Length: 298
Image (cartoon, rainbow, N blue to C red; front, side, top):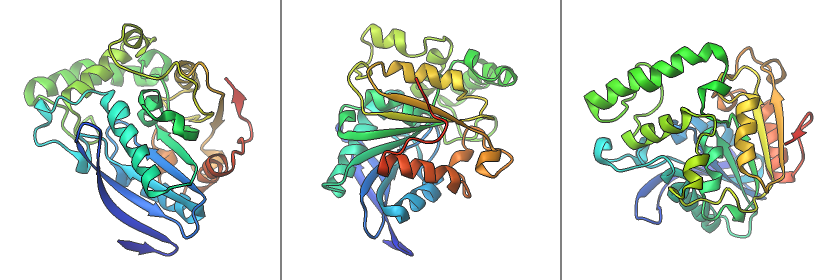
């Protein structure tokens, strides 16, 4: 266990319902009043969220970050034959992580903070109803048609050129090159690509019963933050995702880099060091239920 001022940091292991061992990090403030689960974007390791996690813990939270199966320290011996599918991250890993957070932070209100797919997949969580509030940051439909037009050539090449080559040569998507994240299991990539080829995204497969889900169930309130210079999670793309939660109270707010005191934020910059202006808004929502200025109901 390490000490960072008023925040203790502990590396842990816990298991999902099917027995898969997941690696996590617990950040605990001196007098916690809320528990926050941070769920990563596709290919992001938990260490990427260490700055925001420490900030929220110092404000008065118990924060759990973790690696999805196949990612980082929750990796597989052989990704190519791991059998990991995209919804497993929500259905199994996010469910287990929230249950573990409840175990280590008893009697504290549970909340979630999701980056990209970490927000999209709340609807796959079997215990989503235990969270009192959800914060989505840079969350949106993966279909290229609702992203910024300048990103379209790169995305199409990633899906059908680079990705197809990697699957043929390696059997999975390795880290490096065009893909800046951690290595991806093949079925994670294939499902992500299949969904992203259509505006309706995952909805047809939910309707046909391919994956058990809870998107149609009542959900705790959701507040979503979109960065104006994010080429992927645009306002339209985020609106699409929020519409999947038909019974939830939802609000969306757009923030510019200037409002956050920087020149660029993009798809992942909200969690980089120095974004305390945004983190303050996340804290006010998750710990106190305060709606950010400029939020619009969806």
